[in-house]
Structures are given as structure tokens and as C-alpha cells.
Image 1 (cartoon, rainbow, N blue to C red):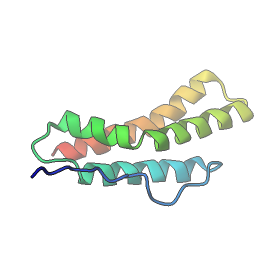
Image 2: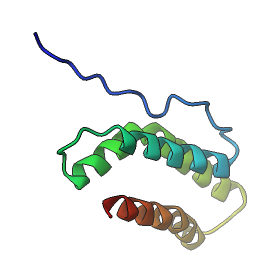
Image 3: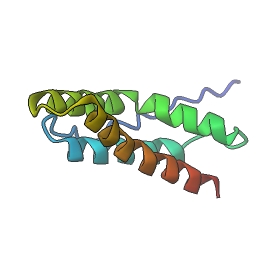
Amino acid sequence: MSLVLVPTVAGAGPAADPADPRALEQAWHRCLREASAHQPPGQSRAGDERNALDECKSREDALVASLMTRSADDGRTGTVWARTWAAFVEPLTAWIGGLRH
């Protein structure tokens, strides 16, 4: 007899409004928390993080697309876009670092 583990879809919750970057960010963070919670024991932290990010890739893509569309619509420069993106990546990095402790 063999046991087959089927991962649950972390992004299976309600879809966020594609026009609202804040809602998309919250959905992505929620997805990452859920995905991290069901990682197999004994796996490296880096493996846990990669798996969680992979599971939530569609949420991340939706957030990035929304931010890029929004910045193109409101005429922000690439420098402002980079700072905006950093505002999302830095909290995520801190959150993942918190999971390690």
C-alpha cells in the first residue's frame, strides 16, 4: 500500500478584486500563510519558502500585473515603480524571516 500526498491549493480562497492592489496583496499574503502551514515536515526552510511561493505564484502575478497597470495608468516612473515593488517585497522577506524563528 502506498500513500500519495496531494497538496491543497493555497490560493483556493475567494478571488480578490483585480483592480485593487491592496486586496491582491492581502490575498497573496493569506495564500503564503496557508501554503506555509501545510508544508511537509523535515523539509528545509528554503524548500518550504520555495514551495509556498510556487503555490501562490498566480496571486503574485495578479498583484504585479495590477501594480504595473496602475503605474502605467498614473504615469509613475520606473524608479517609483521599483520603490513600490520594494514596499511589497520587504514585508514579505521579513515575514518569511519570521517563519524561520
